[in-house]
Length: 308
Image 1: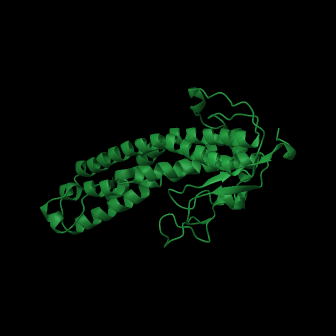
Image 2 (image 1 turned 30 degrees about the vertical axis):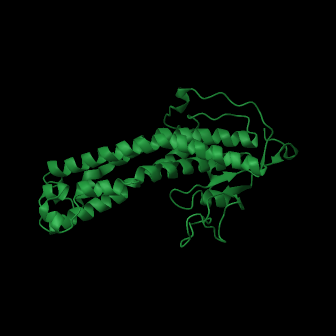
């Protein structure tokens, strides 16, 4: 049951600050696990990709008729996407459930949501669609390196590990290239996905409880749709979205303005305090495939917060 408007109280400045701090703390704690998992994933991926290249001796054929036009596609394939989703899913799932229940407590929702809820799985699937994109940039860079190396007449081993000749030509071999590409990416992926998971879940919960507007908490220099360029660290701009009120639709369209964004959405009022729900058991985070009816329900509910 939704609390009556007279039961709700506007958030004080201190309450808003505490909510933002608690939200970012949750993102940090859960995101630390995702960051570490991403580091392991990238290290293993680099070994897998280079091994495929070396084992094939630089020749990757798709059929008996000829070579791949894009060798990197054969080196990555769909398997890397599957691994990327498996790497991120447990942490995205935990952040989503945490945010749904925290946001629900703020606005007076009486039910607690488990990891098997269709809406949780729907939000988690959205994260999977973003996570697999981390392989796209790596694949393109690997393909460019292979194309350049082959054009220069380097051997498959030189393309993979380098040599005196490649160093003289300032050619970056695959091993060095992937290490450069992975630098800082686990941290960025963790911060970005935790923020998306938190904001998507919170906005769904706020919309479910009838809120039409939310307040934005964000860092200096961050506008609704982008980070303002040309500012000094910590400098604000007239386009800053921090502290402003926007609609649920706008918030859902711009859950983040850029990777590493620190955006958090707050309800304009909170419901009276109620007893905190007990911690969820580990089995609550075990997911199963959605039934047709569950997928239909999730689609209907998500349509309420999506921008048409």
